[in-house]
Length: 417
Image (cartoon, rainbow, N blue to C red; front, side):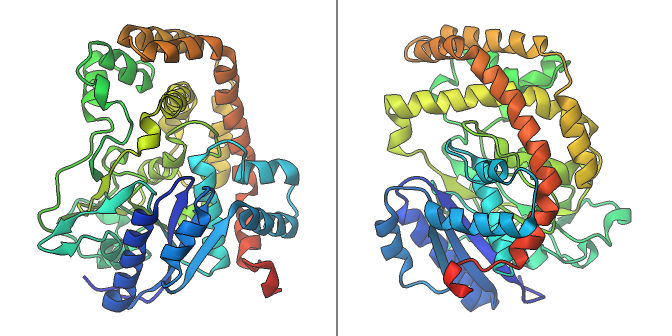
C-alpha cells in the first residue's frame, strides 16, 4: 500500500493507567509509518495516569511526540475556549476535561489538539492493546488508514468494493478495523449464564424483535478473526464491525464531536454511527488490534465501577437509538436538533429498563448482586445523568466548529506564544 498524498497524521493514545508496553507498540507504529510510508506522524499521548514519568521514559527516544498531562491539556483548552468566545465557557471546559472518566471527552481533546498541530487525520489507539504479528512482522492499522483517508473513494484500492457509484466522488472519512483477544466489554465470565441474554439484549432499540435481539447479543463485543493476510472493503461501514481501539477519521471529527458523557462506555462510538447514517465512504480492514483486560479491572473496585459504566451505557441507549433512527446527515445543526429532540421522550420506558437492568444483574448472582444493589441505589442518579449527558452533547455540537477553528490558531504549548 502506498500513501498517495503526504499529510500530517495524529496518532493518539488517551490513558489513565500504566501502559508502557502499549506506548512502545504505538511508537513503533508511528516509526513504521514514517520510515516505510513516508508519513508525517505526530504521536499524542493524553496522560491522566499516575505513571507519567514511566511513560515519558518510553516516549523520550521517539520523534514528534506530544506527551501531555491533565494540567497541560487544561491550559490548552482554556486558551482555545477563550479564543473561540463561546457561551458558557466554564461548562465547555468541564465537558472537554471532566472530573469523571469520559471516553468521548478524551477523544474530543485529541481532535482539538490534532487541529492545533495541523493534522489532517486522527488515528485512535487505546492503552490496553498491542498489535498482531504475522509472518514475523507487526500488523499496523495505520498503513491502511493512510492509504485511504481523505482521498476520493473511487481512487482508493481495496480488495472488495461495495460502495454505491453515487458516493464514489466523496472522500473517505473513516477507516477502521476490529480486535482479537478479550471481549471489548468485560462480561466474558457470564457469557454462558442464562441471564447473559437478559443483560446484553437491553441495549437493543425499542421495538426490536426477538430475532434481532438474539443477533445483537451474539454479535456484541466479540471481535474478529486473527489476521491472515490483508483484506479490505470500501463501503459505508457497519458500526458493529469496527472498534474505537482501531479507528481513524478525516474531516468528520472536525464537524461533529463525540458525546462528552462521563462514567459510561460507548460514548466514543458516535461518529461511527454518523458515518453510517450519513452514507459516508469508509474502509473496513482486518488489521485488528489485540485487546486485553488489565488487572485493575478484575479487582472489586475496578469491577464495580466498570459494571456501573455498562449500566449507564444501557440507559443512555434510550436516547442514542432515537438519534440513530432519525439521523441522515453529518450536518452538525441537524444532528444537534435530533439530539435535543431525543430528550423530549417520556422517561417511563427508561425507568422500566433500569428495573430490568437491576433484575438481570441480580439473576447473575455472586458479586453481580452488588452491582444490582448499586443500580437500585443509584437508579435516579443514573437516569438523570443519562438525560443530562445528552443536553451537554447538544451544547458541545453547537460550539464545536468554533472550537476547531480556534484550535487551529492556538499554540499547543504556552511557551510557543
